[in-house]
Length: 301
Image (cartoon, helix red, strand yellow):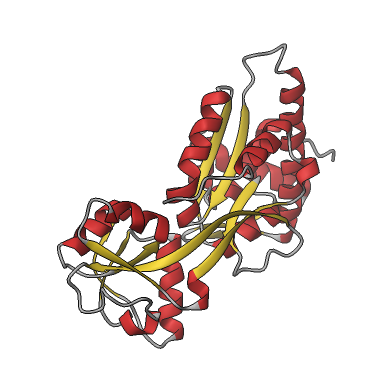
């Protein structure tokens, strides 16, 4: 029996792999769930092998699924290159870039760079998602995303990396706090305090929780918010303390009664890296974004 997979099949499979869910993949592909499930089953029947492991909270790729994902991404990239080459003649075609980043990259460093890029390139869309650094590395290796921004504390394996920005974590305390005059603090000195944090699922909070566990502790949150600005306002009102990127803390300190104390732990001083599978194999519009992201930036004051 011949095996025939069309572009819409591969696009659906990409969306399912990227989201880890047939439901979410169907939604991205603008398909009904029943239709998407049937198409995935038909792909598995045609190939004679299981592509997904169905679990209660979503799906995982089998080894065959990872192989198909690689080929599907290759086809997708070739289509993107075709769009680049034909863009002068077919203005209706749009490019698409999937970009993953950790909390600091997405909240502090990417908005300005991406805003400028998107304004200059109205025919390019960017799918931006926050993940933990080790998850980003795996996603780039698997071909699930085009560009990732990670902390240098995680191994990047075969990926090409380019320095992006310096990211330093600091403790944020009310200005009259007993520790507010310290030049530096160790995380273990504050780990037992009441914390203000980001909402569940934040890569930064997962990072901090991991270091707390290594110290035999568990962070106690009084409240979780969606923004660093909201966190700093809670700190200002003496609800608790927080650990956030220095750039955000310094920005908020200009208008709030808070102090920013550097953490002396080695893991708190991070170099953010851009990682890709192969710079030379990226579609033209993705290389263009990469070049813009790697342009020298003006340090924050």
